Image 1 (cartoon, helix red, strand yellow):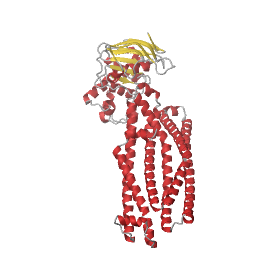
Image 2 (cartoon, rainbow, N blue to C red; image 1 turned 135 degrees about the vertical axis):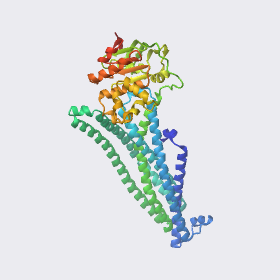
Image 3 (tube, one colour; image 1 turned 90 degrees about the vertical axis):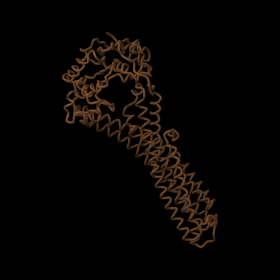
Length: 554
């Protein structure tokens, strides 16, 4: 993959503006260097040359004062153009990063749940936070390389105007130098892939360590956790140092080779071609300007190749997620739910060659009833919850609500009528109100009713009430309090189906009892599915089933 893959996200207007600025910068530099020839001719009182004649044709007198004034003007214009180009390049890069990140996030948000389950969360987070930034830097370097190439082209034209023979020799030397570093560019690409993997591993190590901090401390595993993270960081640093080493070797060879080529060209110009000082000195100046530009071109090219694997990874994730995009609901409305939800011979299998997570399931959930599903870990309980919650569709069999099949196109509409409370509470670093409403428009009275229905009245006694900031993950609250807020959030949407997936498995008896009391008040008003190993919740159920190896048993 290359820059062409980014074309849909590139603003054509900004790209055209950048191209014009690059050309303007290159032309002003080339003209400034060409002016050295008539300037030196005036200083040395040489006979007028071809460039003097060209200047006269456009009305510029070949005098010291006029040439110096023109030189100063060109330098000023070039400085203004380069400043504008710098700002536009930064805007171009940042806009591209934002578009790429938004597209990746959009693709993940709308991706089919089955595919999301196969993606490592830390890899996706690492890509969104770090790899996209590497892409932006790589694109900046690619734009820089294009700008340098345009400048080199302008300098070559200037050199041709001064001395075609020397210019052609210098051009061939430049091409040979760049061709000699093809292997180094391939090495940069390999090192970029290695750095991407190391960065992802490092991010995953830190993310997993922060998430498991309680377990690490309780097991006295601080030393081991520190070693594991330090090992991944060392691998990342090794990849970075390897790239800097390879880049440094290339720069050293470039400077040495360039100096050798310059010496050879000057010798040829003096001894073989018998050129005068007014031609040789400007060519030396041109070559002296060209050599660092070649180094910068090589550097920018290497940096792009180094960052390119990050672009490949980002585009691969986007392609995978977009290929698995859920169908748009459009104007489809969720089916009414007055009689029953029914599964008939439903089978769900996530991967070929593995046993089905659910096999030939027949199940009916009457409206306003409570059904409990128990079973060992891995038996298929959460898959059943995902199916009934509209996250996935069966591979075979039918899932219907009041006789209407919930096909993939209807899944999202049905999800809007489902309240879901999982084992691990998810609270944002935001206010109580924002955590309950998630951007939807609910009045204070509706929020208070939901809190009361969830036995979460404690929240109303918080210092700032609904505007209390809960902090990172709501860690100032107990596990039971957080879970009751999750129940309130689900009830605020007035769901047709409420799913509690191991919602009390990590709670103490008192906290579980509070949730049981809340659900007891809902009995007969809301259809409830309880997924649990055991506990007080199952005592509320009108009917209880057990899943064993993906099969439903009484």
